[in-house]
Length: 187
Image 1 (cartoon, helix red, strand yellow):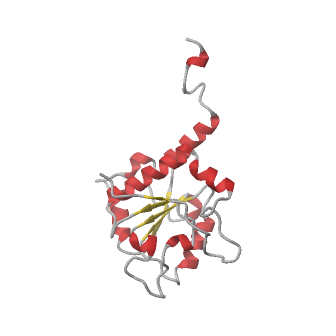
Image 2 (cartoon, rainbow, N blue to C red; image 1 turned 90 degrees about the vertical axis):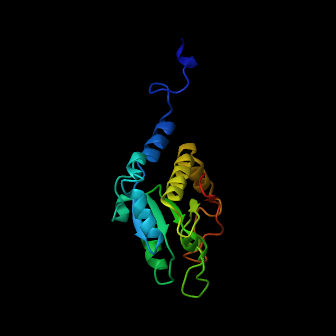
Image 3 (tube, one colour; image 1 turned 45 degrees about the horizontal axis):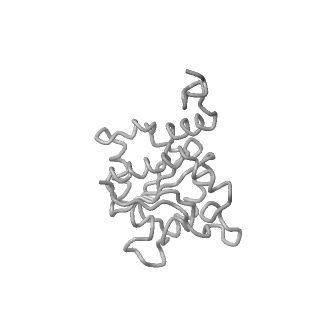
């Protein structure tokens, strides 16, 4: 058996694949729970669902130690600058999961006080639907994010400067449009 016949192993794997694997296996979430979805996010980290098997043992309290922000719940207009500041303090590469219908679209709160979608503040990579979404839905969103990290789709999108990857210079909060993955309820 020649070395060319081997597909991927620890000798012949590409360094880029190794880096993607390491990033995928060590995503550290920042705790940013704002409403009832935060209870489901905490349940996903508990023993019944055990996010530790995905390399996410602890929700970080400092944004400088986290590379994943899970926005769980409705975002008020007063909380929007704080959310953006926490996002800006996170290390690169960083990812965002919008958890729940309130974070994704404003939900039933269609008024002036609630941001009608967190993608107006930060670029969202994966949306987790539901009111509130179950821990299984959040885990499905995390696995979808892991797949995007593994394939390099997210970093390619950001490197190309596609809409949804950067914040427009006219407005300090809103990306042009979202190019994220919307999930259905897992089976």
